[in-house]
Every structure is written in C-alpha cells, then in structure tokens.
Length: 310
Image (cartoon, rainbow, N blue to C red; front, top):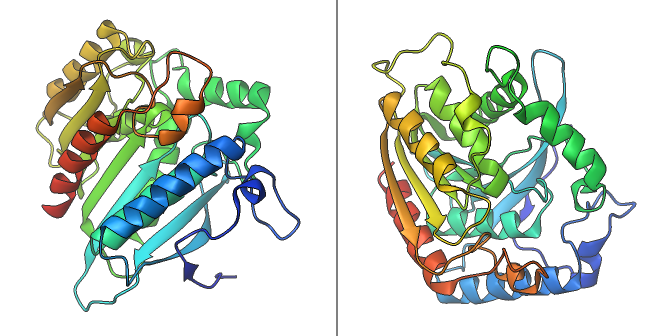
C-alpha cells in the first residue's frame, strides 16, 4: 500500500516526539530538550526562506535483495511540480537512527530550497525509533554492518547503501543521473561504501562530522577501477576538535577517495566538535559534542552549492 503524501513539516509538540505511538508514529527524539532544540531551529530556518510552498513527505519501505531486510525510510519532495526531472538526494543518519526529527528538518529544508526529491535512508532496519533507547541492539547491528569480513568487505552496509540509491532513483520525477548522498556522523560509512562502488549517476557525496573508523582495514573494492565512470565530487566537513575522527582515520578516508579517482576536498573547522550541525547537541552532557552556528552554516552552504550544480 502506498501511503498518501502529507506536509513535510512536523506539527506535533516536543513531548509527542519522545515516544512511539499506536498510530504508527515512531519515536523521533531522545528527549524534550532534543526535540525542542531541533523544532526551534526548524521554525527559524523555515522563516528565513520562502517556505510558502513547503514540502510533502511520506514513509517508505524498501528491501535488500540478498536477505530481504526491510528498511524504513522517509521521502520528501518539493511540493511545486515541474515537467522536468529533478535531482535525488539521500540522507544517511547518525547513530540515533533513521527516525530522527533532525533528519526530517534537513530533508524538508533541502526539498523546500531546491527542486528535488530527498530520501532519509535507513541502514539499521529501525521502524519505530528503537535506536534511541536500545543501545545494546544498536551496537550489535552497528558491528554486524560495519566490521569488515576476512576479505575486507562490508557487504551488508554496501548493499544497504546501494539499495538506498536505487530507491531514490526509482522515485517519480527523479533524474537517475543526478544523485547526491549526504552522511551525518555514522552516515560517513555508507558514503565510503558508495565511493567504493562508484555507482554511475551518483555525482555528489558529502559528510558532516562523518566517522571513518575501520576504513584502514577495508580491502580493495570488487569490480571497480579508479578510471570507471562513476566518479563523484566529495566534500568532507570535519571539526578539528572532533574526538571521534582521529587524524589517521580522516587521512585514510581522503586517500581512499582520491585513489578511487574521486574529486575529494576537506573543509575543516576550528574549535568545532562532533555533531556540530545539530543544535540539540548543546544539550548533550558529553563535552565531545557541541553545535556550532558558524561551522554548520559554512558546511551546509558549501554542500547546497554542490547540490544546486547537480
């Protein structure tokens, strides 16, 4: 059954976002502070741009081909229609999982600013927001998809990244040759796998405080050469004070991207910690996290320019 399109804006109060509901509404926030911080930023963002048209959104289920794993995404699209095909943009989530009000805000913002279709992808198979509370399960699933096998391959993660691309390419009005993928935190890993796969049509890849642990242990990509057609422009947005991105991990990721023939650049920000794009990180008790207005604006502005050129 295909669900109807609804407004891309979330109008629920903060406390309603902090629990899952019998009506199918998943948990979208860690707590009320998190929800209020994101909703407040979303409201200010919408007020700063021409948001009369808004966006439309609906949940989507899609499946891996190897084992039929169900993945739970959310599609946002520009409300105003055009006869021309538009770019497709995939957002890969943080360790909070795909049911995150932060990603709903980002998807709505992009789909309102650009004529495009946005997919919030799922790499955990999280329908109801369990990643917010069941951290043991999260660590188990994270290990299963991120730890390379004896050949240095992460086939489960690669398949989930690839099926996200196929899903956005299959959406109505999307130009399959104008695809971008953006990864936040944990979402840096599917960006690495997409770079390794070099899928034709994927033109832009970018990470925001993306983590690259284990990249140095990856084997050579299977079936692809540095000179094949699927090369992308890659922008890594990284805080210099991010303890989760050691210099050796960052350098290993950059080397991997360049060795594969991609056009890779790094934009680094001084006095910037992990999670710098999310205003809710100001409520994180860990000193490793913090929102940065300046770094967030610089990173998002640079990526939006790349998306406009798709």
